[in-house]
Length: 370
Image (cartoon, rainbow, N blue to C red; front, side, top):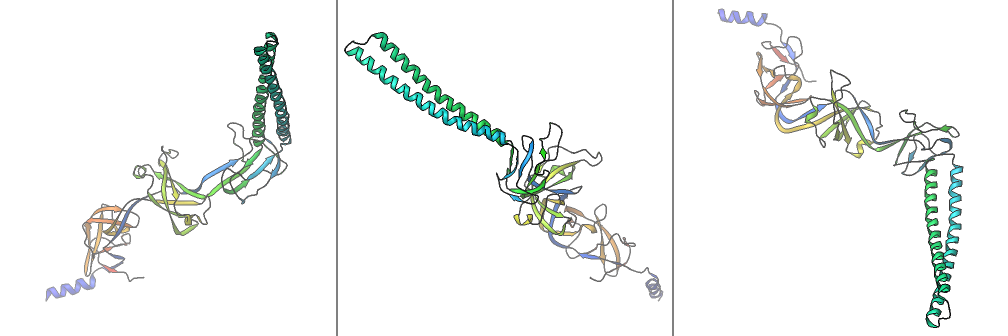
């Protein structure tokens, strides 16, 4: 009788159970990942800041911002009429030198035939003096040398033409690759100059290759040693919060950045692997990385948010207080943690561990789904 009364008193005076969110221990995929410490940036694999090698007045500007261009397409020309005239002069001189070489070689051939006739007459009939033959042979040799000199002059002229054309090309800006014109900092008729050494200036044309993009982001120095080129990564962007894009680690910086003394980082680059993921992306977008270090499928797992400090969880049993249990964990990420021991499949644990009143020994009831 006393026991029954005591039970009724305890039942009506016990603390109100706290409503908790529960999770049933099950199996699935768990991946170990690392993420960037500060926001990363989408960058183009190739970017060229273009300007003419020679300064001058802009005579032609064939593109505007946003234009798509192909490799070797003409983009801009500065005034170069004087250099064009030099090329034309050298080309005209080439024709003259060619004619002179032809004339010199014909004269040499004639002199060689005459020397050969005189030598033959001297040997057969001895009616031509040796001195005459010697003079004829020397003259033929001299004229043959003049022929060779004329051809050498042609080769020199060709080199001058190449040099003049190279100098002319320094006034022309062409696209080094297929891309999109991001910025134009020149106007028709204004003067542009190359950047002096050590003094950067705005490029006349900024060209981007948006067919290849990558994310550059800082990773904590503690996590960096586990990262290797070729690892898979997931990329998320503030501009497209509901989309995940795939990539591969393409580069790990060979040094540690110490701009912030308390948070030293290593710059890691992830190249976007799927061409479909490039659609709608622009260089300069902010992006975050999650690099996959290791993954295991069909393992016992629980939500990471359910794990207390010291690898402890709160286990739920109907009509009994919450109990604390220590577990051994394996791989872990923001979403799931692998359980190596301490729990069994089908057991229920508390997920809402930060809620007031949720602790070992407290009575709890399951929150309704939804």
